[in-house]
Figure 1 (cartoon, rainbow, N blue to C red):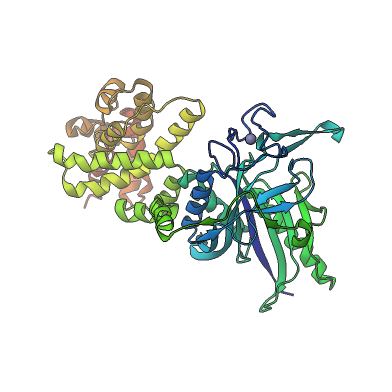
Figure 2: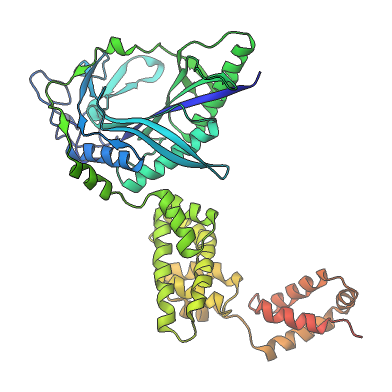
Length: 495
Ligand SMILES: [Zn+2]
């Protein structure tokens, strides 16, 4: 039986506002001693009143604009009642019927094809406190620092067709949150948490079957694994003619399985009703337009621009989007390169595109490796975009060869020096002097007469061997282009 997965996601994102959602307490995002960022409001003392955080609301609307949502002109907060020790008021302030954002869509690229995923809604709520279970579950401690911090919930339509797609969706969503600067959206530290809903259906079936909700998954990898596991589990049930019923399950990363959890209350059990202490919100068209205008360049726009403006490949663009620091460095390098033809007589305007693609290539290989190492060692990058651009020119003009790039970068980083000086100091200038090279080529030819003979009979592979010999004699500094020409000439078939 051919079964198709139907997947929808509910994603909670911690907003990194300075203060909490309804009080002036610092929003410490897990970075403080327990119960040090608390006050009577977030502890739910009787008689206190919540004051909504304007920044959190604007950021939620900004996220809505990025995900092509309709930004509601009317919105309100509601109370969702349930009893749990991590919820001091006995209810959570959230949004039920009138969230800030509705009906959006978000495109992702899966296997080179664009897939549009519907966004049902985005609403804003307060987070609960954090329960900390002591070893062996002997007792539970509660840290109220997280109570009342702003939490945005993004709900998708059941448009996601595979576990891989779910993972790609979350990765792209993380990039959006980071680009907007509203959350670091780090899954491992709980800044972005995902519940995944999944059911199976037969091909061409229209009605959906009851779904399994997999709660609180905390990494991209686990989302994919948990969904794959659920597909297997539910398929087995279908095989037994037993269609899975609505269930709540948790992901156990140690066993690699989902396990049954308490069944979730229905909406009626939560007794939703309007939050009487916060008046409803009314937004004018101008407010909405101002939010849309504040949108920065989004990841897919940047990806498109990198390809168009700089001639980068899709893979190069993707790598730059993954690392915004590197992307900024590349763009600064490009401005330096673009300036060069005005300043230097040896660079013509039509050299610029070649220099740009060469810069991207080196940046994403040797430079990126060095950058990551320095970054993890906590060191600042001392190479400026200007010096990097000059290094690329040296490479393009054949003054150094590609073997010299790595040692040059390391030395430039160590000393902060400019590439010309570093090239001289390290003695890495490429040997392009034809008289000198011709002498070495002749030496190699006379030392390897057998190889030369084999080349003359058509065995071209010998050329690479001779090239290696020349490189060894020049300590890798010979200009490979010139050497190859000389070798071809010297080993040409004698008529
Ligand atoms: Zn507080």
